Length: 216
Length: 387
Image 1 (cartoon, rainbow over the protein chains, first blue to last red):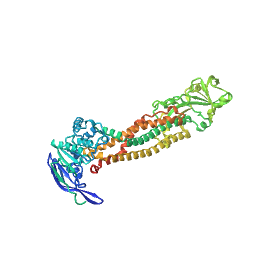
Image 2 (tube, chains in turn red, green):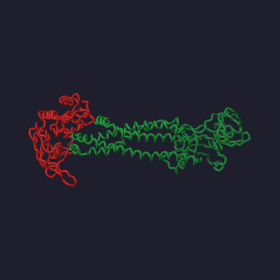
Image 3 (tube, chains in turn red, yellow):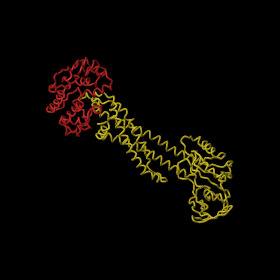
Image 4 (cartoon, rainbow over the protein chains, first blue to last red):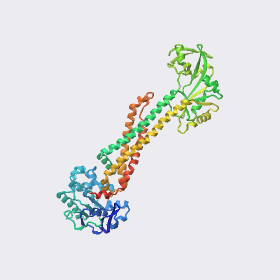
């Protein structure tokens, strides 16, 4: 599903190159659940965004589902992302002014074939059916993250990229969130999760350690 | 779930940002509507005041001796009354408010007076009707100049005898109550037909008074030449004289109002655009995470831009409607006090609502364009990494 070949990312900061990632190689099979673990600043988020077509690597190649992600034009990459990837972030990144249902339906704006009915069914499964009219500020952190996961899963993407999904949650909520991600995986989805916590990496079939990059 | 729904949600969520923008647009629109309505009202007021100063154009018979004209206040020569109808039925636009007159000095009760026969204004056939200028005196009635009424202690309702080829009795229907400071104080005004009969000159006139049009496409220098050309096309041989002090005063006043509006409005619009632009920029900064997540969800740059530009359109439309009613209300409130002569004509100019509804959103889109482009080109990964 995911093939990273010698990918690296350098940033230019104050006239100097700073290594954010790599070079690294990674292969994730379709339907596999892989956790990438590493300390803060090791480039975990950069790796995730690179796989999701959000950050162009300085070197190497990113292929997802056989597609050379950065060989696509910006517009094609946008469409590809809408079809292929579901993102889950540590900070949830919900639209603060939209209610729960509207947040879950965000992929509709990208032209994804999703329906309010499908969103309601998913929210029911996530135990949020009584919260659909609530704004994010009226939800607990655990509920916010469940909304974010529902948004990521609504259009049934073949790949979910999760960035520290339990980083802001208490153990109970963390367990619930990981349960939903595990459930998605059990239904055949591919998961690439980055975390610095051992607990979050628990349900993963494979854990990849990401060292702190040299050159910083 | 649509872009419009999100725009409405965001506006309701960030009310202060929207209200600040709305205030700016409404204020600018109110000023625009207020200024333009003021211009319309001032133009009308100025026109009325200038009209009250009298006609500014004289069309005289062929061969009229101007030295004699200025000394006697009328031309000895005459022309057919039909001329005034010929002019009214022509398609010229440089003159309007045509009033045919026949004047002559006559002896009346031992004095020399100016007997003036006036035909009620003949409207230009091809142009919109305007309130008529000049006097409308019914047949058998006369208006008396101030000095004559005072000297003979005449009042409305009195009757007077006017001698001519055939003497007749006329009812005084009006006496001018204040001195005009001109020869009008020794005039007896009557209907043109009555004066033609008294003087034995049926179908004859010796002047057509008119008002020159303020045509924006004709420069000051060309104005008289163009008027002469137009009149001569219809009435060859006649003489055309512009009473310059009245004409110039009228034009200068109207142009001054237009220049004032042309000077003030761009400044107001610029300040308003900068204000809205700054607010839009702040809005983009506040919504960086939102832009990031939308891009991560695969939402294209056109839809992200539509979120911001669509908000600008909503802001512009709301500001235009609010500003139109604010500006109109201000003029309706203060206008009658400022313009007492035309107070009853101070009214909303509804065409300005259409202009505002088109212009204000366009201004907002223009002001919000750079921030919207910043939102579109903003690297979503930057904010998504900031955790």
